[in-house]
Image 1 (spheres, helix red, strand yellow):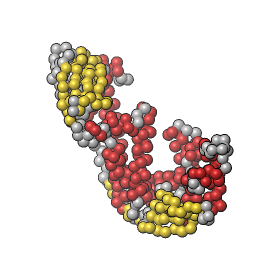
Image 2 (cartoon, helix red, strand yellow):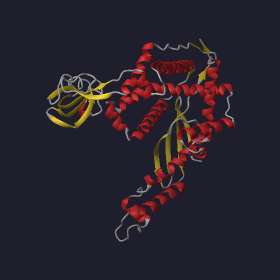
Image 3 (cartoon, one colour):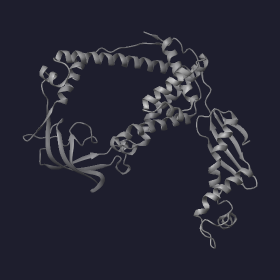
Image 4 (cartoon, helix red, strand yellow):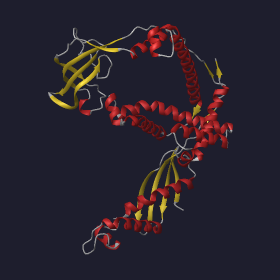
Amino acid sequence: MSLKSVNQIEKNKSELEIEISAEDFEAAVQKAYLKAKKNISVPGFRKGKAPRKLIEKQYGENVFYEDAVNDIAGEYIDSAVAESGLDIVARPDAQVTSISKENGVVIKAVCYTKPEVEISDYKGIEVEKVVNDVTDEQVDKRAETLCEKNARLVSVEDRPAQTGDITLIDFKGFKDGVAFDGGEAEDFELELGSGQFIPGFEDQIVGHSIGEEFDINVTFPEEYQVEELKGAPAVFHIKLKEIRFKELPLLDDDLIKDSTDFDTVEEYKADIRKNLEESAEKAADNEVERKLFDAVVEKMQAEVPQVMYDIRVDEMLRELAQRLAPNNISLEDYFRYTGQSLENVKKMYEEQAKKQVDLRLALEKIADLEGLEADDESVQAEYARIAEEYGMEADAVKAVLPEDGVKLDVRVSKAVDLIKETAVIK
């Protein structure tokens, strides 16, 4: 057995003492030697042919220890966790406390465990459903987007730039009189008032005419992603090369016939109103669900380890990276484009992560209390849903998602259904 002892350090935190026998450690050291020897040179021997004892004599007895421990520690830790019966929520933080050929290896692994959850009064939660009315102004504003889509760009020659104009500029940025990386571009198309650049940049182009060259003064935000530019004043030299504005067509029956499947403005607006009303109904349902979930979390009592929230934040960052990947945008690019930092985004995600983790724990507890089970049909349906969502074969999904996890997801979904079905919607 690899597990020597289990000591509870504090609530939801335990330390495992794990032992790797001298015999198993010796086998791991020998394996590490066989793997590494081809890259080791010892005088008097061809590369890769030096005996292990000679290598250890020259480089130290512990020359292969780190590789050996790294190779086998994982399986010993996993075995010890299983033997302990602990329901851990994160990979253990392991540290070697002693190591020798004679006595093997002792590892201490700190484990965070799933908290005990208490919850009651989760049936019959009362919430108000509010469906916002769709106004004529909203319908008109949505209809006007058709004019935007069919707008044509008209060059301006006889007036200075105005907010809303689309300009073509060259720019070069200087800090303390020295040009900085990433602060220069030619033939850059910029819509004034779009907020694409840092505050003050676009406003100072307004009022200038084609052909003008001028300087503008700005201050980078304190949370800007480039460290040396955070809160720094800068000067941008601008050359205004072109000004254009959008000329919008009239919203009339002719435009409707040419651009949509409808014949009249009246028909087009009626369809817009129908879609907006459906969206308002869906938004109201989503708000009801949010209120129900908030109420469930409020009724839960548990001491949740911070590491569970941290893990969820990290998952959210990976999900963000996956959403950006199809557009060949890295997280670093995203931070640069949005003027944010990793620390700021993590902080922004923290509250959301806490709600999600707490809700999941509450729903799992409700599933336990209600005896909600995941039958085979529901499990297979969940595998099929996931496969369809990710464009994969069901068997491929089953190969990467353990059935126990999918069963728990199904049970949690049933807990959600229970909350909704028993809720009192006013």
